Length: 310
Image: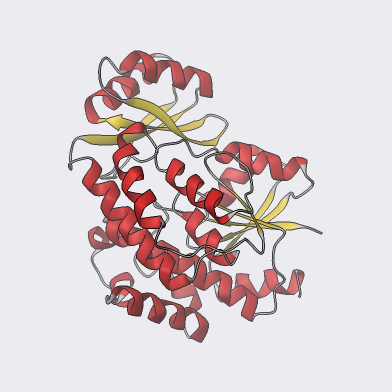
């Protein structure tokens, strides 16, 4: 049976998040490779005591990339077969590209650190915001954002599952939109603890600089189909893949459509490859027939590999 792998992004990080793989040499070697690429010990950072440090965008992005790739390598080492398709939620798309053979891991580590720096520099700290809107349909959230802009920026940017949409933009406009969403009947409008308003048009300056940086990185044709956030499509041409990564910075993450497409294709089984269970939960909300297993420990990796042998 065909299956997919999903890679989580920012928000799934936590201290000691790879403790379920204690003693796995493949996992530790992956983090050693990341440390060599950055000149910084991500393993020590992850296993330290400073939660605020790993929540900083410039640290979260390489940490989550390393965690996703390490988990995928552990699965392959356990004898698991390669998936039919891969997809990553926002930052997770870079882990998916490494798994698909498009990017070398060391290049990807340096790339996501650069991406994080560009994103942080695009909007001064405190001027941007994001919020999760629960209980309204997509079109209602889009209209609320449009009405709330009033010269600022407020956009629906993460379509995570039916009734769960994240908005981003200028702090004041996002606050107006969140208040309007609650007045319109939203179950909740939760400010998110982030320093960068991702996937909205405030990221266009960062996207232009990212495009320049990507010119210096070698991309290969994917060995596994990668479904991209920006267009819910797969691209064989490395130049087209780079273009989707540029557009991803200022375009919505169309996760609901991604999971729904796979289910329509008969790929209802998947594994969340990385810390946490966010994507596994979203998959079930998107389609009750979708079965997503969270690979958060050696035990879960071994079980999934045994069920999907090479």
